[in-house]
Image (tube, rainbow, N blue to C red; front, side, top):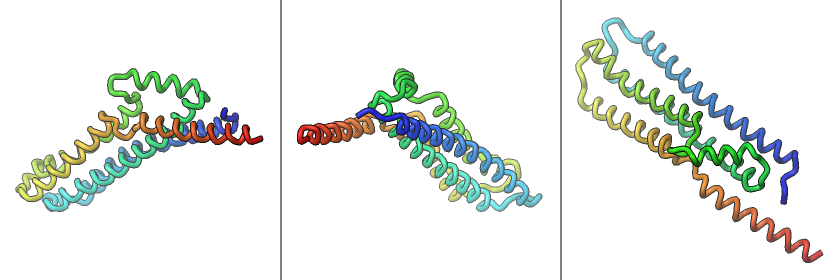
Length: 198
């Protein structure tokens, strides 16, 4: 059953809103990182920071960045759900062209998604290097226990961002397409039965 203009408009509006929300999340990540670093510098005494506080601050930065990235990936999956439906209903030339462009790319991700990935990767890398740089600048002794915990946390963050960003794990476009095809076929079959009964 073909989509009417009102449904098409509603889906296109939802897709635009999700794209805008993802842009806001990336901007929020940059703003949070910059504000966090500024706050930390203002709170640090002239003789140098507490080693534990420096690592805890870095953990907190990475945790918030991780949550923002994860939410952005969930929004991406929602966006793919809507855009795939429009493609299957033959209701959007733009979404069809984007799909063709996206699937022809080497990593199967669009330029703005690569930009998101690079931003979160760079911010995470900066958060990971932050305590090491601070301890070096203030000539603070390194606590092996805190350093090991920091290396593990940083590695997990960076691997997750890298695998979901380059690996494109959030997309699941093939599964979404198969699920929509099944749902559309089921609804079409039910509609055909109703017509026959009339």
